[in-house]
Image 1: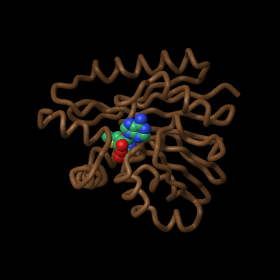
Image 2 (image 1 turned 60 degrees about the horizontal axis):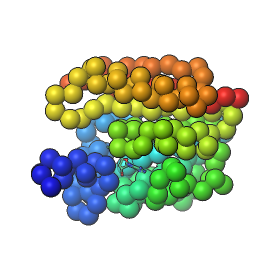
Image 3 (image 1 turned 180 degrees about the horizontal axis):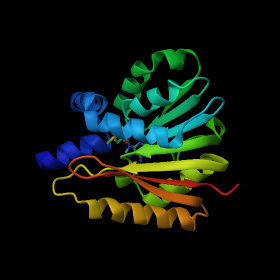
Image 4 (image 1 turned 135 degrees about the horizontal axis):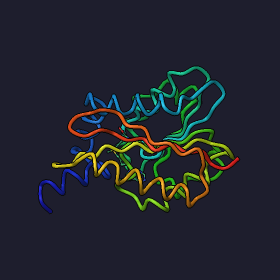
Length: 203
Ligand SMILES: C[S@@+](CC[C@H](N)C(=O)[O-])C[C@H]1O[C@@H](n2cnc3c(N)ncnc32)[C@H](O)[C@@H]1O
């Protein structure tokens, strides 16, 4: 495996010491913090709601959800290293019973942890079978629930056209799954924008 492939594989599934470093990078990098805050603002969790983050990494997006009063959350990630970092970052919420962290995938998530008012992912969609991922997120949402999928490519030479292509593909999958109120928003980041595709499960 090339060094580049080794680094990309760490972002796909952080493991061991390198994986811990990847978690620290995700939690400290300005562009990731902006992407996370922007996405959580898009779904706007409010009092009494329960939110799912798929591929929660070190738990930055979950922290932003849990800053909001009387919001509960579940984070799922297939990396044990990321689940440990998310637990440490959000230990008060875990102790208070406001946050549940599960090592696994959204496809294997037990049905009884939901259903959720809102569900989101940030820079996970590029790593998964997108149709299976959207179908699984849909299963865990309440009728009328909101799904947000954020993506900003990190590879060299990525272009805005790559961002929009992914947004179009995700939008098509959401429409085929019967989601409505579809909208695509862009965040101006360097070197390429981030995109968030939002849609509601049929009521
Ligand atoms: C680039 S990181 C982003 C982490 C976090 N969302 C953030 O913005 O800081 C991608 C994360 O998705 C997780 N991941 C990738 N594919 C996954 C899958 N099929 N199921 C669960 N987690 C997955 C990885 O383990 C990693 O923590």
